[in-house]
Length: 219
Ligand code: BJW
Ligand code: ZN
Image 1 (spheres, protein in one colour):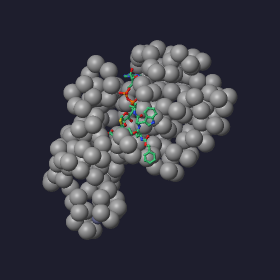
Image 2 (cartoon, protein in one colour):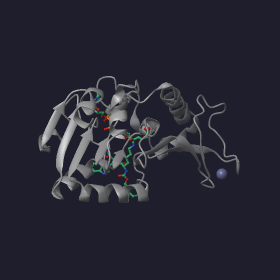
Image 3 (cartoon, protein in one colour):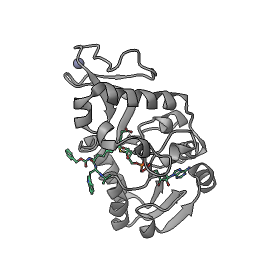
Image 4 (cartoon, protein in one colour):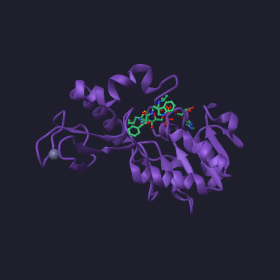
């Protein structure tokens, strides 16, 4: 199995969250990626997501996404909301932090998926009931989608090899999949340009850009 984070999309030009050029250096997570922030100022939160949707709309999968898509018998779990694994051809991607291309009504739950960026009206409104929509992502303090999380935990318990790619492994419960897999007997192989929260407890640490290392490792 593989768990990917923002680093796998960095070479596609999508900013990561932590680190020198990370989104959280310029924006405070609690002002933008929490239910409280959205309740206080849905337009501000949507402006940030609309800006990110515009960046992601122009981005293409890089050799890391493509190598993972060509790997048979791989359960792919991603924390990324950008959809680049899908565009690369991976099937059955488990998106544990949601999908930036989904808009979900806060009143009736109706979901709409498209790749429109920028959106014509912010905040966008539900076509079914007219209430405000929210981005279909998982914010701090929110539970992860139950089905995806169950499949991710099962994969961690059954994995022989667990690739941890381009994640700082600081955000839970996703980061907890690494020790879970390790306790269950998996070999942990990490690919990252820098050491992460889990690097001291992996079997193999491959230092470098995912777009260079994964094609060599998997193809
Ligand atoms: C490269 C590279 C290249 C660069 N090649 N590598 C236990 C302990 C402490 C806290 C908690 C805990 N359990 C829960 C919490 C609270 C919280 C949490 O984890 N906080 C920590 C930060 C301390 N977790 C939550 O709130 C979660 N929910 C929850 O626990 O709910 C409980 C609950 C249960 C039941 C009912 C109700 C509630 C939810 C977490 C949601 C996270 N959401 C975000 C935003 C998503 C939407 C959006 O995109 O806007 O998800 S935050 C952000 O971080 C995003 C990412 O998916 C996530 C992880 O980031 P990632 O992918 O690791 O990126 P970076 O930037 O951190 O790292 C990039 C890495 O790439 C670096 O290592 C680079 O070196 C590397 N890199 N270029 C290879 N080319
Ligand atoms: Zn609605």
